[in-house]
Image (cartoon, rainbow, N blue to C red; front, side):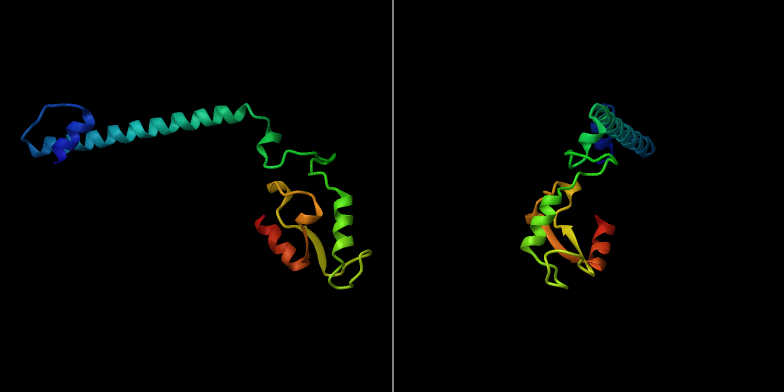
Length: 136
């Protein structure tokens, strides 16, 4: 069986009755097949790198919308206002002023393609926000 496998990989039709030479052929065949696979994978990787290098860095991000002067995603103050108007602070019940212990958070992060709209916002405790920011 090893001999047939070696012949299939190497593409040879020679057979030898010597078991040592069969083992050598099989080892050589596996090494050659492994080398061909690695070379093909490297060629695909080089092709992907070449394709990605032509794409500007800004468009490789999930969100390529407007940015502020510091390079951060531009936020809409009107969306935050609309959210506060529709959803009062959980700790004070007011629609204006500070909301101790809570922050307004986007359900789906802006950098992941979430909308900067009141429908994508939620009240979140500061502890939960810190935990979410660690894995986002």
